Image 1 (tube, rainbow, N blue to C red):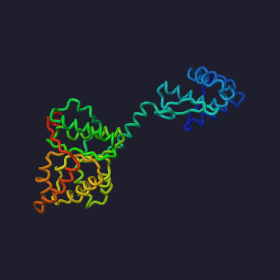
Image 2 (cartoon, rainbow, N blue to C red):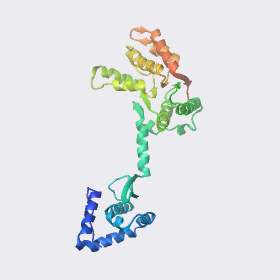
Image 3 (cartoon, helix red, strand yellow):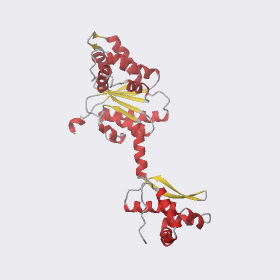
Image 4 (tube, one colour):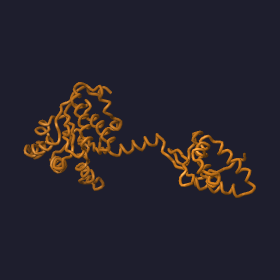
Length: 323
């Protein structure tokens, strides 16, 4: 059989045009007959023809032979491991309204990729470790004894929230030393909730505070959208609260206080991680500013945190030092 070059960037249209030229040119009738015989010898095409009898007549098949040939070429390419016109998709022959058409269906790998991208888009983060992207609740199947209560509480929260996402669910305030897994547990929770189509925002609070301060003098670092998202996102996680520097009290009062007040008033779940206990956060951190002690402002803010989250102490081996 003579070699026929039907490949071009125009894909289906070029295949159809070339086949019509072959069919209409008397000198190429023999070539056309061989192409048709080759196509009909294909097992999948033979099965397709048999499945659609008697509606699929010889006249319809010849009329739509260019479409069938396009399918045939794409199948051959796939077997040979070559790139096709639609990477990530496989062709299917369909017989619809007395017409043969080719439909491209996403492969399992493509579907998995699209699903991962959709899940990832539901988790926003600022200043969080990259390894959180791969965190799962299964990673805590053999958690240290000091993390057990937190893991159980997070698992229970996920189950209850997914069952009733429109109800207010109190978050958690995970308090404990560096490196025991507080942040990683929050990442695992976020990834699981994202699978259930729930949006989560993970914020490393010291990074946020630094960005907010820089934005005051740098218009290019507009943080308005971030603040708006922190107010309204379904679930907000503030990681490492208490590690930020805030001598003026501006971050405490005009950023954190406003955001937490909004979330409290609207029943939006909020999580926290910290090295401080709630009592320490109030007395040793929030109450201190360069203007002196401000216990009333600190107490007011802590009341919001206590409404939004339940404190759970955690402990264990510092995994950062181990790795």
